[in-house]
Amino acid sequence: MVLTDSGTVIRLADSNSVSDALRAKYIDKIKRLKLLDDDFFRVCFQDDKEGAQFILRIILDKDDLTVIESRTQYSIKNLRGHSVILDVFATDSSGKHYDIEIQRADKGASPKRARYISSLIGANILNAADAYESLPECYVIFITENDVIGDGRLIYHIDRTIAESGQPFGDGSHIIYVNAACRDDSALGKLMQDFNCTVPGNMHYPALRQRTSYFKDDDKGVKQMCEIWEEIKAEGFVEGQAVGLAKGKAEGLAQGKAEGKAEGRAEGKAEGLAKGLAEGRAEERAKALAREKATKNAIRMIKRGNLTVEEIMEYTNLTEEEINELAELIAG
Image (cartoon, rainbow, N blue to C red; front, top):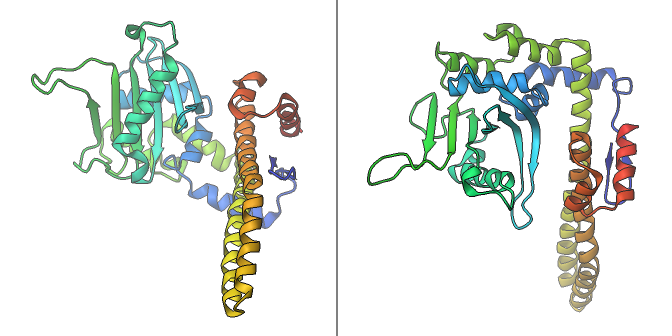
């Protein structure tokens, strides 16, 4: 369910309320999904440390890597700038941290975005009393549909070096790009073939075949994916409402101006009225949009289940009563 800024609750349909036609439409969409679709990737690897470990072992070519914790849609807040939500954030037994990002759009995997994510992870990990030397190694890994770097390679490793000597700088920051458009017979090449595959039975790796098959072929998994599509649609409805409202007001103002000009002296009156209404409602619109954003963020945090009510209050500025009401609605 989604709570709009006006207080209207949109209840997400369960599998019994989804019409046969709509369910068939969803199933068709699900059949066409692949692991390069970030929503599907996050669902398949929802807090699945074995799955994250399997992928990291192949990408990093480390068979002994052991993941002790993995979280999907891990949020890192930045009160003074852009916050980020990581697709998969994992920690291994040696304390190294890994962010796995799925990117089909090239602009989403720009070098500066990789740098920014890496810096936010470091800032989020290091506590105020910690020494800088205690900052663990961090890997930001982009799995991209296209060859973002453009050198025709399957994998690119980016590490800081000293320009004069070519020696590693040793700051513990690593960025890796995996090019899913390059598929060969290596372990990583086969992994990228599986990421591009829409039919689980055609996948090379049984672990991926089993996981994706659950959400595509198993009745319980398909039901879960249908409910996710309903949630995405509901959230899109809320966002569409805000965009449509803003567009409608802009078009109304433009039309009012045009009619005012045609009527001569009425132009000033129409523009004055429109301006007065716009200024009078600007603050309320801003508050409504801020509340809508805070509510959506709170819903995601509640569903994730790894934050306290006090932490959610701090991040969203919602009251304890409002957060508890959202939690009850979600539970219902």
